[in-house]
Image 1: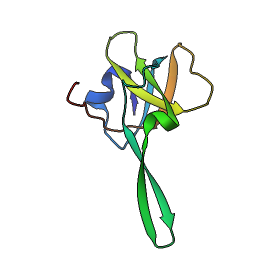
Image 2 (image 1 turned 120 degrees about the vertical axis):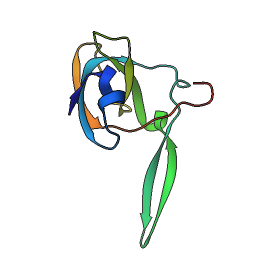
Image 3 (image 1 turned 180 degrees about the vertical axis):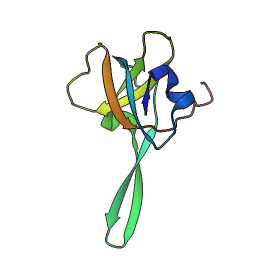
Length: 103
C-alpha cells in the first residue's frame, strides 16, 4: 500500500506493510516521542520481553507531504546516516501509537 503521510492514520492498517512518500524532519526533542519497543529474549524454552525506549534504538523523524500540514512519525536505526530533508520514499510496517494524557 502506498500512502502519503497525511493518509497513514486514516487509510493505513496497523501491522501491515506500507510505503510512505514525504519530507522527513529529524525530531531533536526526546520528550516528543517516548514510546517503547518490546524486545524478545529467548533462553531455551522460555521467551521474555524487555521494554526498551524507542529513542534509545531509533532516530525519530516527522514525515509530511507537500499538500498537508499533517504528519506521521517514522523511525530510523540510531547511528545511521541522517535522512536528508527532501522528498523521499520509505517502506516498513505501520504501528499504532496513542497519545499520553498531555496529548
